[in-house]
Image (cartoon, rainbow over all chains, first blue to last red; front, top):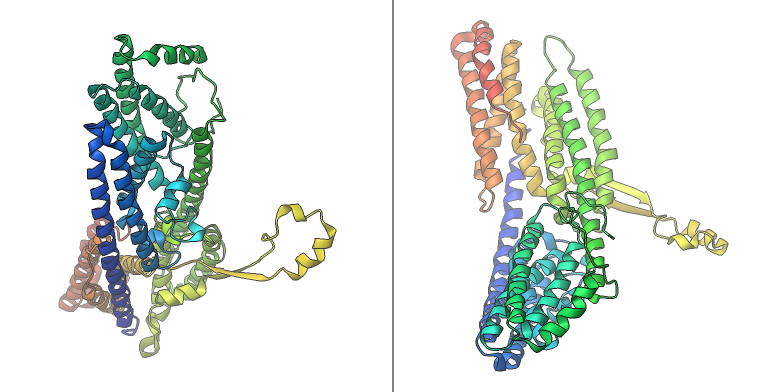
Length: 234
Length: 294
């Protein structure tokens, strides 16, 4: 009977988790490098809140950091064995969301539209489908986009402070679209849902800014743009 | 309003959207596809949870059934045979269904969905193995490890679904399809960590067997199970792993089980076989306070 408990099982398992630990260490090193680049980009983009003329410059330097991240993601992809993305994904989900946020912010500032998941993935050198390899998880993308909403509500306030009264309107339309988009999703009671619930506060904040601006007649287009919006609402 | 009927969806509130959704809006179009993808993922998750729950329930019943083995009733062979059959059925039907769901997926993505069922099954399976080998003395086989379990969770399916549906009407394709009916192999992936966690629950069952045997006056079994428990405990504390809070909790429970079993053996030794029957009554409450599974 004493043969039933096989100690080899435990030594084999120890080897198994030692390998896993080692891989996790290596992943952590790369993730830390990505975090560093993302932080740089975040700092560079802070300038949009105090100097509107520097937006273009901030975007292009942030783009450089993001490009550098793509290389690091290649490293990660090489580390993670195929089919085991979700075994280790907890290491990089947070930073990927931050990067999606940064990409979405840059694209919004440059072009004024919402970055698609495909474009965002491409900029980080990631696939969009899990079957194609190291990919951008859909929830990470969506969570990153939600981070953008709160940054834009801050940007709306600050652009008014800096005397740009048109921008809040544009932001308001953009966030409105975003809100509509998120309402199409069937949420489970998870992290995505929680953060989505916070989106309405960002929407509210931006609407307040638009209200303040239009009621005082600070914006020329405020009235002309509000008009068709009211019509379509009826 | 074009909204998919979803579970626990707070979006379906009484508030009616005043404007029609602008389907040409690129954001709306993009989010429609995201919604489809998220739904597919959540649905698969839910389906696996359901399958896993069935496995958990049946495994718990099998364990309970295995506890009905009593040296006074001489029912061991019969119970073991039936338990074996029921476990095989779980492998052939339930695990196969989960494996089908996980085919071409990242198994770790849905780990939380199937892990309770898998752990409970491993507990039942290894307990059955333990009971089978109990009387074989020196010739007894040792416990199956995860690779052995992996070997019994191999499945085959005729790869007929590979052909797209639109080919059905095409008669020229029919012959080709028959030859292409290759057997596709797939498996249910047994994660070593899940295995280790499942086996750690086995020790709770061993403790129960130890105490029940005392009740039926089978003191040899008490000693045997206690020894097995001690060996398991040694094995588990030899493991050195960070980030494993779940395992640590289970090892703590295991220690409690082992202490109970050791106390039983102490009583057997000190009071002798006759007094052991009385001692069993002392142990009864303890048995109820600790559930060996989570």
